[in-house]
Amino acid sequence: MIVETSKLKFLSAHLTALLLTFIFAALAPLLLLNGCGTMGRSGMMSSSGMPASFAFVSNSGSGTVSAFAVSSSGSLSSVSSSPFPSGGGSEFIAIDAVHKLLFVTNQGANTVSVFSVNTGTGMLTAAPGSPFVAGAAPLGIAVDKMGKFAFVANQNDGTISVFSIGSNGALTQVPGSPFAGVTNPFGVAVNPTGTLLFVSNFNGNSGTGNTISTFMINTATGALTPAGSSFATSNPPGITAPIGMATDGKFLFVGDHMAESVVPFNINAASGALTPVSALPAPASGCGVSCHHNPLRLVIDPMDRFVFWTNVQAGTLASFNINNGTLTAITEVPTGQHPFGLALDPTGSFLFVVNKVDSTVSAFTVSSGGMLSPVSGSPFAEGAKDPTDIVVVARQ
Image (cartoon, rainbow, N blue to C red):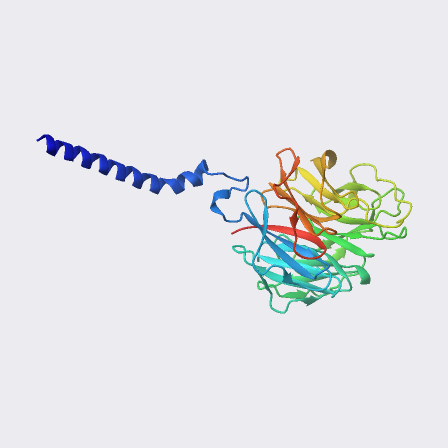
């Protein structure tokens, strides 16, 4: 009797242990997904080993596009088969989130390359017919939020090419394209509703140009209509060399490369007219030995709280708070040599800057107050030559 009771107790304990093991195995994945693992601000588990997003970088020196997996901690690792061939002088890059397409302007080849993005692996595949012929020295490129049109600034022939975007990435110039009415166009930006196009008219050697042109966009055809005269970015008008621009729909922020400032403008959504939020800066006296001063490229965080820009000659990244269009400095941190393009990840948790001279990518975490802290391991080797621009897309 005593022996039988001992056996029962042993079997009971053994079955209990097996049951507890089964329950733990079943619940462990759920516990990890709900916060028991290490979580990044993007919501991806760092322990999962899966990237949270992908970053794509245009390389003007090698005519390629590099692809990187971005971890939940903000670190970068090269995607298989990267870099991908694009075209001579690959300069600016843009993303069409609707069709999962990547666009790259090749200023040396006078073309635009289009890639289909595999948002699960980061692999790029050239779209049918890519690259597509643009104007002379295509630079800035922007895509409307609905993924209907791509707008390209052709610096050397003073035009804007407008392409309709096919679902497979094929580009077709819309009737009337390319459109004139600009002087040395460099950067382009589209407002969130897709009704206005802003173009920076760059000129570092004289008082002509150095303005912002605004166009009304026909949302059905993509045709452009000038919205009045161009707008000066200094007082008196002179050498400012506007390049980078960013807009939240209410305000347009313009980087006056030579006037050493960022100029905020109010946007009249109905007419496209621009009104300076504050006094315009004085123009520069001349270009001097180099036009690469400050600032260069700009980006606004997803919640329209902060604007960030690269200071190319200083080798820094600036962070400013936006308060009804007025900018207040938050911080300025060092990057690599000659920082060019910059991009936030879709959550606004990480900010990435490409450094042209040393061919690296600097990565920063962005705090809720707009402060910047280097990601461990930053800067990351870019693996190609002369990176100039970057976009980041969520992994899906």
